[in-house]
Length: 280
Image (cartoon, rainbow, N blue to C red):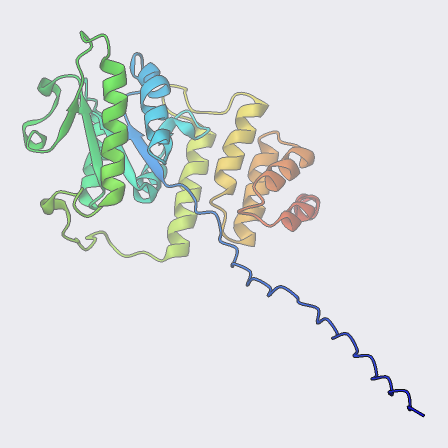
């Protein structure tokens, strides 16, 4: 009798391993780089205001910078410390030399003194002083129907050249660092003195009667500008008293503080009623 063959045990199907995709390492989040500024030095009158809006402003933005003029601050007249700060912070400066405006040449001198790259623009070489004629000047001819487009393109190209090689953009004679010859002064003392001078100027106003806030809106703008220069609790207390006496209410002062939260901590707004009550 033939014995039946023993059945072989069935093979187990191989267990499938779960394959997980390797996690890609997270790229570190990069902060968005702030655009630099181009400070435009030019007369504040027609036709230059039109040039700024329709030529310089779009040409500068096209090159990747933010345009700024001295009159962009909310004040009828800009004090020297504001000009000096803007000139130092700007990556590139542009000077419209047409009409030989004295303020433009003053600001240009400050820029050259600290080795800033400056683009010179003029309608005629007659308005370019002899000392500057050796430097590159972007010229424009208003008899040419396309003069505006050409000038805007030249400005954009000049800014891009400077950003690509900022050292080469500054003439050799202005590259040497010069130590300040001004008398040394404590930083806090300097800030307080500047603040007091500006407050005094706002209180009295210029001799011609211009520059003094005449409306609540003007006062708020002036107060906001000065608030950004406050560096201590004492200065903040003085700021509160000064502008409350000028007619701004607690609510308005609080709003100004909150609008400037990038410079002043918002909790300072809570102290405003206490500051005024403490003074009786």
